[in-house]
Image 1 (spheres, rainbow, N blue to C red):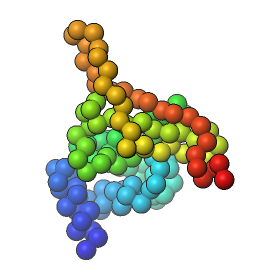
Image 2 (cartoon, rainbow, N blue to C red):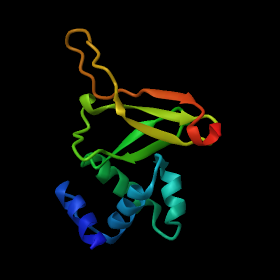
Image 3 (cartoon, rainbow, N blue to C red):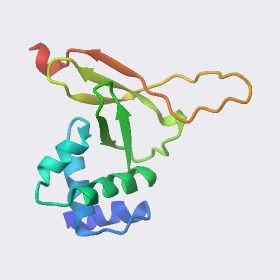
Length: 138
């Protein structure tokens, strides 16, 4: 039954549900923070790295996941919210913990609308707050 839900989620984004795509989607659903390509490669160390990378690019192009540049020089990935269309309106803040190095999506905090000069078009905004997360603060 779980696989059917995962298949439906992929198909709703017009993504063919291959075995690897289902495994990566399940992995992403189970995460509480963003993950890097190397995190996913370690989780699936017997899998072809190019397949994992292509899967992430497919997910991102289909707006199933979004990528975050959190200043660590490693792109991180996280699932989009159900109603996300990955437009600048949907952008939210991210929090990067300087201690554990994890990056969290702060989906309840939207990046405010910014009035750009005439003929400028925003395609991406990246707001990363850095500090110590609740788990490390204890």
